[in-house]
Image (spheres, protein in one colour):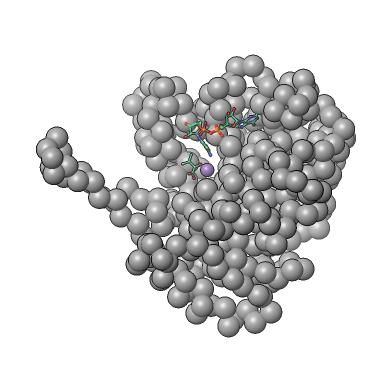
Length: 359
Ligand code: NAD
Ligand code: IPM
Ligand code: MN
């Protein structure tokens, strides 16, 4: 395999604390499996850059990034410095759209050693994927304000659901379900209240289902689906959802398995025309930044997903992914653990312990 080129963007807040641990572990693993990686750090896409330059990224960001094989990304956002919609629409959301990363793949797994807030659940009981549509849907900047400052003040915000956009995420989700032992797909909907886009989404699911006769599927309105995540998470296998519903479910799922701090995600361009982005589900956590106590596992696990993606089916890379997962499990179970998991270890200590197991 050739050398894989990876752009590194730490972003804001704890992105800067967990990124070094992600890199430590990915590099240790790459050495062990003879995988060649070349990292290039970008000092932009953060709120301090914005304060200095009036924008989150240089004008040629697309040119600078487009030929990388992957982007390893921490977290962006510091609402006291820059409004969130400006920092996120100026960075992460641009990557997802311009690089056509239409799949946001987010595993939800109860890991050994992580206390589960739900009663009587053990590792293995909760193990599913949220497949989130990542380029359209409710996330849009279409709309505007009218009659501002008057009693008629009106705000319009459009959603966008294209046939291509809906069908490609459903196809990815059906195929993923087909590849798993349970072969089960759940579609998140809200066709009782959202009268145009959601019945359309349902229609497209029904249209595609006959192509996957071995996949059993069902659909739930998002409200009761949220309740079912808490009441019976073991029944899920692959859950496909629109951009906003997928966002909410991919915090709720990890919270049901103990903590969002360990949850990873992959923003995938399956065609590999552009780089994919690998990042933890969590954000920049201003409330704990600066103390070196952030849990680095979400960042590290995302690094494992990045290696597997780079391998594109190659057994060595899948083994590298599995080795990182095994090291994470070992440290989650036996420590050292960060304070969010009841331990007293630092971010660095936890990262080093995981890296040590990969030597
Ligand atoms: P958050 O995920 O940053 O934090 C939520 C809570 O979880 C906080 O109490 C935080 O301390 C805790 N937490 C998060 N990650 C942790 C970790 N690794 N270890 C221990 N505890 C952890 O969500 P928020 O507070 O809603 O957002 C803060 C900022 O991050 C905002 O600007 C938001 O827009 C941004 N954000 C960015 C991303 C991203 O870049 N992908 C994702 C979510 C939020
Ligand atoms: C996530 C985050 C982002 C999203 C925000 C920061 C725009 O919450 O990656 O889940 O909503 O997609
Ligand atoms: Mn989110």
